[in-house]
Length: 471
Image (cartoon, rainbow, N blue to C red; front, side, top):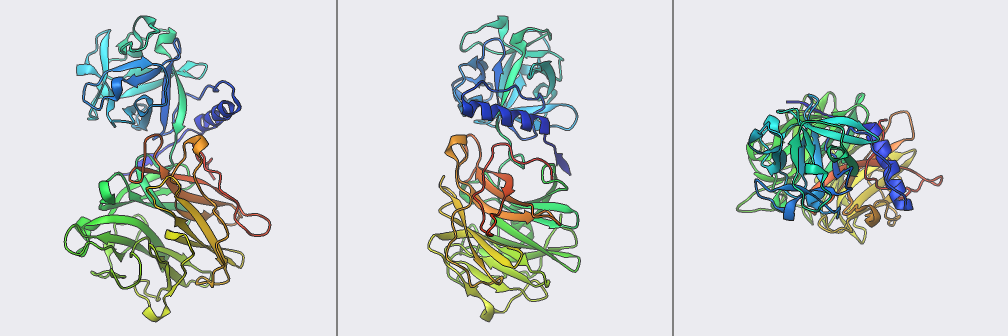
């Protein structure tokens, strides 16, 4: 199934202003009542200023939802997922459980709780503009509004649904917490442009030990609204030599075929990671393992065989980069599924860890990589320059992407870069710890601007909460 991910630019712009005012010490500006798909927000009752809260941060089905003093807890952060039919699903970020009208009651005074998401209409809400940047939330099954009973201003007042009116106790003010480029948990994004379309190929995140097995593809014509094309390769089902650890892919096109470079491991026996290559007639797959065995076997080269990336030069020659703990670089043969071992070169700057990526601007090649551990909030991106796709590379030129604690942005890294054709506009896709409660296995994908200085050096990226406008 194909799902289009839509974002509201009006809310993004309004929320940017709100964040700017907060930083400046002013009051938050009202946001447009149309949250971007996948965004996380705080919801404060207009009459009391208190936040919608899952009591005691319960993760149980039936956990009660109330108002409480706003405290930045994950149990006060709510993710909005667009259902595509004028309704949204609202889930608590700490538990991933849905805002639910208990027992699908349509009575006045029906209790509102959290419950495992199941798609019922008692877990679907219409967002209505209530004026002055506030919203009303209307339960789909009953047409009744979410409210604080009796306009209570007390902490712990349990929420309910009631006939919709105009009282402030039925109006909710939103403040954007996070708006990732893709809804959900993804990491290690490889961004590419084929024809007039951009594509994103990330790691599917949220698994202990990064043990996910599936790759997905997303496409966009503006870098903001992304279409999910579903699973394009499952290493457990589609690859004979791997059954987990579907990490950090790279992709390239030649003569109408698309080559998908990926890593995979096994859950038993020799669990070391290896690199493979799959092929498809479409950038959105499905992809088929091209070799039936690894392209780069574990132990063939120093370091771990993960994180493939491909750069294609102006003459059409493609180059493969990979490695954790050591960076290996080699021209690919014309078949795109082999290379000559004698052509492999290495470049290992002092803090190199993983996630290498290469671009060319003018006559200068830029080799970029991630430093630190992806589980660390200090994960970051550095770069060097050279005169060819294989260097020789300069000394590290400086960190260009790192955390911004003032915005709660941590663990920024494992990036890729794309240029808008015919312009000097560049964009960087990367992951960060999911906001607010992410870590090294719960990450989200962002896209921000990448700028060059007049001397050709790369300016430090300014990571944002809300991402970019359409290109």
